[in-house]
Image (cartoon, rainbow, N blue to C red; front, side):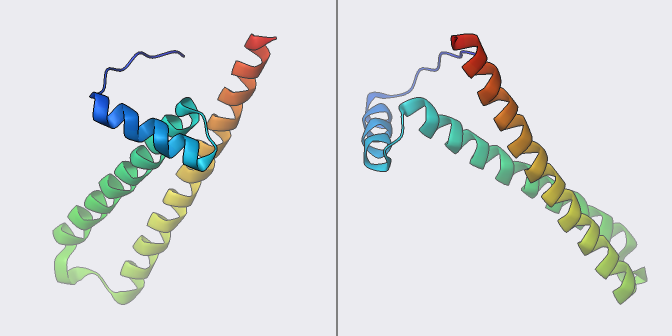
Amino acid sequence: MKVTVTIPDPLARETDAAAKALGLTRTKLVRTALEDFLGRRREEQATAALGRCISKCGADLSEEDEAWITLSYRTMCQMLDELDAEWAELERKRISRKRR
């Protein structure tokens, strides 16, 4: 999907300079930055939800309960990362086919 975004000139210049220094296109740099930002945002939201869960249970959680919650959280984050990678690969393939 093509999206038009307006950004301030200094940010555009810095983006172009960073892309050039990294050997990336502007599009690839922006896509990577968005994927990273949104991944961290999802992780922060999951962490906040986990914190709310633990706060509600308070001292009632055993060490085993906390361990299970932590393991579940890590597993969920790993699954989301894997899904993100799969989605990004499918999107790259779709765009590649479209250009042919």
